[in-house]
Structure formats: C-alpha cells, structure tokens
Picture (spheres, rainbow, N blue to C red):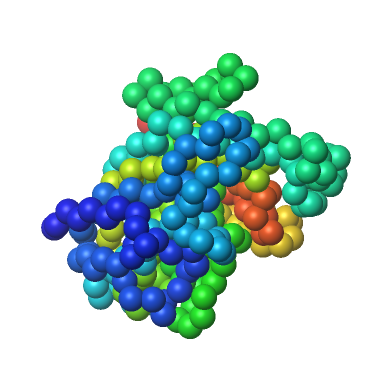
Length: 313
C-alpha cells in the first residue's frame, strides 16, 4: 500500500464529474491519498469582507472546485468503492452565503432579493474545534467533504451540483466526519473519484445552500469491495450506519433511504423485512441531508448502540 499527495492546481482541479478526463492520479486498491482542496468556489485567498468576491482558481467555474479524477486501478462496475476518511483538517477561514438567490427555499422565506443577503465570514480554529464569524457567534466544527463522487456514466460532463443515486457527488452529509467510510457503487472503469467542497460545520439540510465552506486537507484510503451489505450509496460513521436516498421528490428520497435501511437491519439481525421496519420505527432516525441542490437528499441513521443484543437466557 502506497501513500500519495495531491494539491489543487489548474492540472488537478475539475468542476464537473466526467470519465472523459485523464486521471490526475492513479492508485492501487488500499492506497491512501492526502488531498488538499479549495473551497467550493475555488477561492485562492480569503475574501476581504463577508460576501466579497475573491480570486478563484478556475475561471467561469461551472460547479464545485474539486480535485480529481483519481483512478483506482482495476475498479469496475459491479464493485463498490470504499472511501475511508482517516483525517479531515479545515483551513483557517471559511464563509457562508445566505439569501439573495432565487431558490424555492429563499422564495418561501422571503429572502430571494439580493438586498436580503446575510453572508458570514468565519475564522476556523481546527485544533480548538471552533469556528467564529464576524458577528462574534461561534459553532463547534465537525469537518467533512460535501462532494465525493464518481461520474454517473462513461460519457459526458456531469454537473457537480445535484447528488445522484449513481456516483454520489454532492451528498452533503454532516455525519461523514473522520472515521467514516462511504460506500459508492462503481459506475465507470477505474472509479475516477473526485472530491472537494470542504465544510468545517453544517447542520442537517444545509438550509441556506452553504455550510462553513472552506479549504480542506483530507487523508482518505480507497479500497475496492466485491460485495456490500446493501445496495446503493451507504456509510458507516461514528454516529452510526447510514443509507441514502436522492430524488427530486422528497417522498421518493425518503422511502429509498428507508428501504435500504430495512434491508440492512434484516441482514444484520436475521429478521424479516416486516420486523426490520418495526425495528426501524423505534431505532432509526430519518434526516433531511440537504435541501439546496435541486435534488432532495435524505439519510436514515441507525446509531451503533440503538439495537441491544438479545438478553442472556
């Protein structure tokens, strides 16, 4: 097993998910990669004030500023790419946008007018685990990557903005902190994973459309599996086991995440799906992952200690 390092540059940065771009790095099954990514906007320096523009790495950026694609030699559709997040260290500043964009959420809240913007600029203390903005208000940090994705199909350039059932991408799940493993079904030969969109902190839903957006230094181990406990995108995190649903319809996204969690529970405990649904009703939390990216994201969370072992007889 080998360790690799990538930094953001015009050679390594990408703003779409595509299998038609040459990989910026090739790794073997089980290798570790430390990759530094810029913020989603690709800012190369801190904005001078909240909401101000700053220079960006990519001109005319079409989506998130990512690093990739990274090829995993031998990966093939039918396998699963396991991405284990060994370490996630945010840069020392970040930003959050709010309002001023015509989205369904902003319209409902009366915040679509540009005059209603409420941007925040944050100082991030990675070691202390706190981010504090220009208002003097702080939050505890829990760093993760918003985008970890494979091209959804072998041809074309695909937007990084919506999360997808095939390939993942802009999942924005706040539970994917260090110590988590994200399982992505392989969609194209060599997997071709791209990563970025660092978040120092975020609530479920990412309701303004942004989190504490920041650069991130991520150490991750990439492994290939022939089998997985459930279909689709899922994760094992410090908070618990997670299954995902992504769809333009919130009901469909919810039932997809729940359906896969029912399968996982049935397999874990050797029970029927009907029994697993009953267990899910008392042990699983359904959470709205994000509302901001054209597609609803929902995840089902089964905490590791939620189901107790059978009592001794």
